Length: 243
Image (cartoon, rainbow, N blue to C red):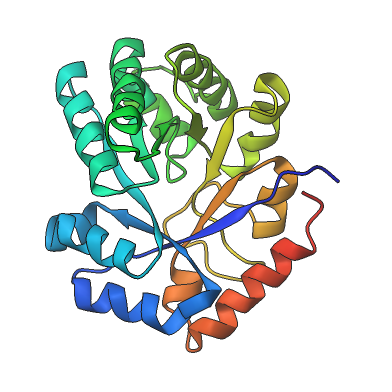
């Protein structure tokens, strides 16, 4: 067993700050790391990040920046100053863009003492091979594994802390890029739960065994009749995983 542990992050995919913070308050000490994505951030803005930080929680600001390098650099710097611990950019934005994001995060750490990791999104977990081929302009299905490894190499060369990929690609990424890379696996579903809109999913234990540093879990916890019980089940699965 390695010394690496896998941290669960709960996705606050809610349309109001009140609904999101109700989930946080209900889970209490069971979860101290939350994802704020586009839905919540566009509804509640930076204030919801400050509210989470005031509750002692860490924040994964999942805005998936994809723009010219200067614009992305400013966005990442603002996220770091706001107190985000993780921020995402699209690896497909190119090496210069990812490098600008990574350098902005490092400058913010030096100037404000706010440590913020930059993770590059490789291939969205909702994409099937045929959808990926259509998006990439290919005539036949695209192997997601090949694309994830290619984009991971670009991201690490540019100075990112790590990548976002599905649990199915996490083990090859870990094997090729070693212990230092940070791997976040979204779309995690406990055994027996609905896949919802995810095409490439794994269980918490599978993601941990594959080498994930972080996993993101949403509806299996936030939509559960008993959220604390659902969170307990995630934590128990991680405790017994061979990570």
